[in-house]
Length: 166
Image (cartoon, rainbow, N blue to C red; front, side):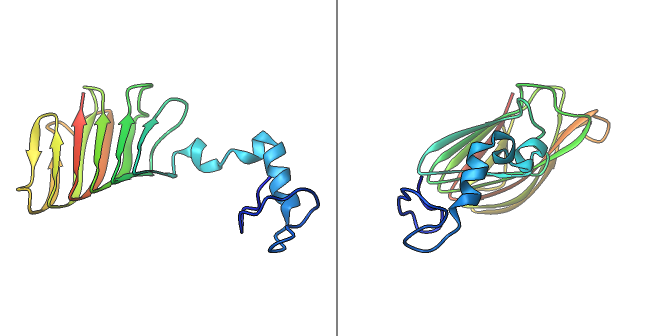
């Protein structure tokens, strides 16, 4: 095991020989899978970031309401087609800095986009938002308020792009 504080390999004992961190707590969490699962992953609140790489986030087995996702010199894919979104509004905060993001949304879900675009773009099912330089986005698909399932994405892009697809 490696010390989570300083990164030194710990051979044995309850404390790190380099920095003194209590390793018995870390060992307890690692050995108990129920403790190692974060409550955030079950409730959707959490953060997923692709930094110089690509990541995929899906709603399979969890509610993504309140989730933060982004790409920094990378790419993030959010697939919301694995299972039905819960009734009501699901909110996702999405940012793209020198990167890109694709969000796959079922046809029956109403979409609302808010946020800021600086030298980038946001596309919602082939409709471009903003002018490419600086834009404050506020777009709602027709019938959003009446839709049983709604998705609100607060999207911030800086030299990046976000595409909402089917």
